[in-house]
Image (tube, rainbow, N blue to C red; front, top):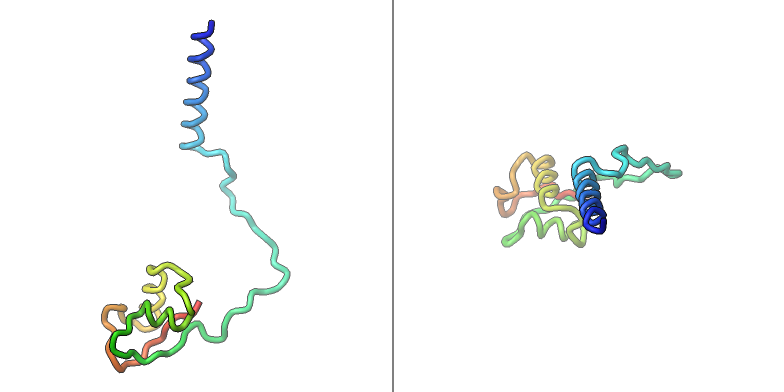
Length: 101
């Protein structure tokens, strides 16, 4: 009898683990929260900087924001969107729009 209960318990644990990994038990609908005040956006989502020797897009974002508040992929995407040029092609002396977050 002990062997039967052990096998049954093992199968139950296996089944619940499989179910949790494939289907899940959490609700899949997004959680919506009500905000009393509208979120204020900055007047300009970028700052214009003139590139100096040794500057990179990441260093310019750090100057504009103090820290890097978002992922590097988002910074690269936003920089390309604002300037129509990839971050690897910035040139000394030219002005570029640096995103602020």
